[in-house]
Image (cartoon, rainbow, N blue to C red; front, top):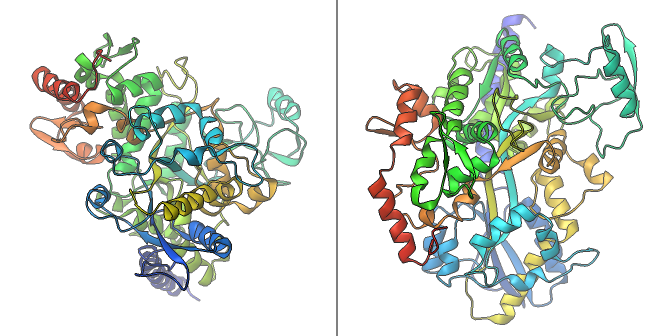
Length: 594
């Protein structure tokens, strides 16, 4: 076939695949829907499950097994996306349990709309060594934040967590290695050779490369195959982990982006949903200002510690001067980072400036290898840990078209960490580590019901989904983590995609990775969840008299960074803040000024 004929074929195939996959991705994953009435001699239990990136196949599989053992009840999974779930809870709930993508249901807890699920925490499932509560408490930072939104004045547990999903910059390791965009281990550095030996990495020098010949170290999951070239150790200083070959400094980061932009575009993201890129902004802000300072940004309380403002001054933030946190230095630094790297036509895919959905962005990214004028090859996709599972339809379409090496799980996708920023406080206030931001922290809840026998069956099913075995199955199938303590088997790791393995290792590497959860943390802050005027924003992109919903919309405006820094600092006036705090105190919060 001549070159032009091949190009036309690729264009036609790309269009067909994009249409097919997009239509499939917009359809529920799994086919069960709610219908009225019971099923034979069994009473129906309807479970509403948010049908987003994790889909619902995982819980449909669990329901099928549970139904085989239940004598009196039958679980029906209803895949859906309910926009106003709180309204449904306040009126007439249409499901017996809800698995949602967010945890902003404090008003439902306080309003007595939900059943207490604390008895589930005391259950130990068959084969488990810990109760569900013990598995939950084994993630202490998470558990402590969760108690603030899930209990009613410290009593009960009306929300249970599931699916903790970080967002980040994903890339194709195979592509990066093929194009020479990674940093290779230096074969001429005797310290590199010594470190490899000390870490149990067996290798041979071949030409310009160091090739892996075996591994005898302690890693649960080793990222090199036999005869694969070994890259630099990355920010964690270890060989054979999720960050090998990645830049560690901004200088190396700049060099990598310049190399990429010579033959491809660097970034691709959804222009329709601001949150995808906003979370990168927040990760930069937290990595620069420090984890405690970022918490103060969300909670309006620095717990007696000083935080640094954009003008270089330091302040202790309390609820009474909470509005001043909008002057945090990391806000300006994040703006500068995003302007330099993301508001850059040389780096960005041309579709970034349009309102493409996350599904369209995924499809464009996966089809970029055709290198068409309107869809150039793009190195990195800004998306969440679920994106590979969410794009299964496109992977299947590629496989069916003959691109078998591009099917689901065939490419080595990973996450690119932010480089070390000059002056950053990092995750330990000593300048170390990388930060990722969590987009969604899901919850499980049960609306009030009079039928206590049915309620017991609902709780039994929820507990069943939280057994070690089913927590593992959820991660293996979706690539997403559940915020409980559980361990994966060697067989689990082998069954998971490279991206899922990298996600697991990043999530659990608390020595080098910090995760911030702005959405979850906001739900713990009274002045935020009691604000009916939407005055208190997570990210006030405000300049002059204009407000922008996302960092990219702000950068596309004709306003300067200083305009936005000034706008954020003056976003809420002293008097407006006093009124907001007074309203929260009238509801019984901040009684002691904390």
